[in-house]
Length: 126
Image (cartoon, rainbow, N blue to C red; front, side, top):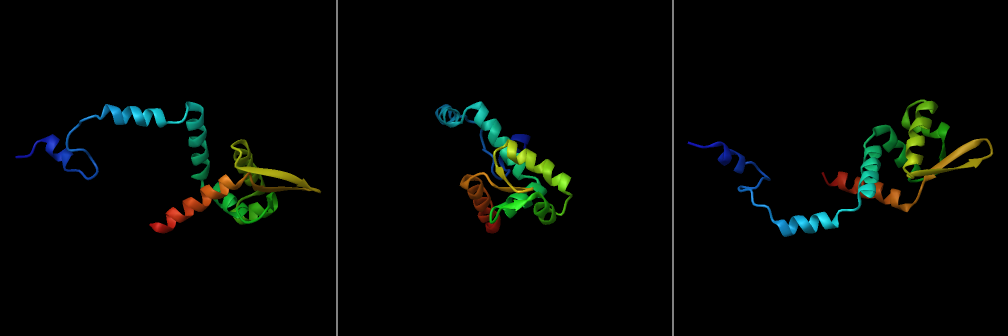
């Protein structure tokens, strides 16, 4: 006859016994970035989790594009792209410049390109 704790212990990836390693917990807590940095990281990954924003970012990984171009790439209206770009600008994932009458967007820096590259490499492993 099996009791509930035996069933819990048999699940993959779970501890068979609840024993907290206080030293390991303290090291993990000490290694965590400060609250503002963690909150910003959550916001960045939330932004990366949207399919339209991801299409925009991936398109900008190779070239600068204007809002009209990005609307075509993302398959949404220019208004929708502008809304997404505003969020990406606020998170400092993209930046823009004026080119005569066009607003031309690019990735803010190589860190954003690296996030995309690493994410794609990980996705390709699956």
